[in-house]
Length: 101
Image 1 (cartoon, rainbow, N blue to C red):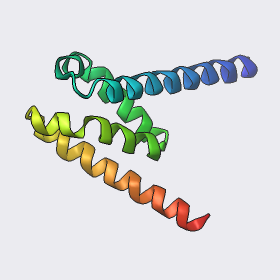
Image 2 (image 1 turned 180 degrees about the vertical axis):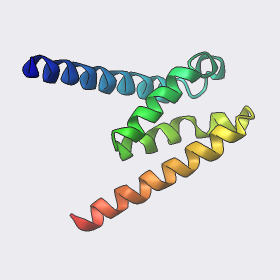
Image 3 (image 1 turned 90 degrees about the vertical axis):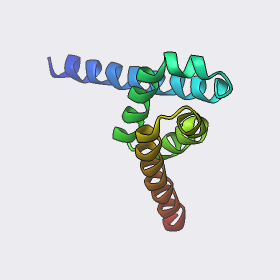
Image 4 (image 1 turned 45 degrees about the vertical axis):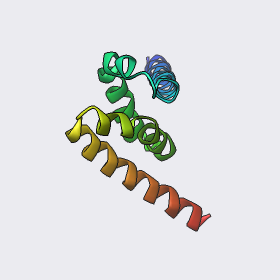
């Protein structure tokens, strides 16, 4: 049973990774299509939060780069501030890793 639990956990983690990757690409490719980003905002937020939980600092920074302007231009002020602060922290973490390497 222990092996089955590990397999299920791995399937779950793999699924999360694919989900995050899909919505990151979606946000990067749809930056000029605000209506598409608005339709998928809940999914984009979930993917962003999973990237944070998984300490995927580069992905967090890429999400911000792809969608930060959208938040600003369309009045999502709270998202703009929260995602911006989170992305800034992620970029700082990336800088620390590069310094330590």
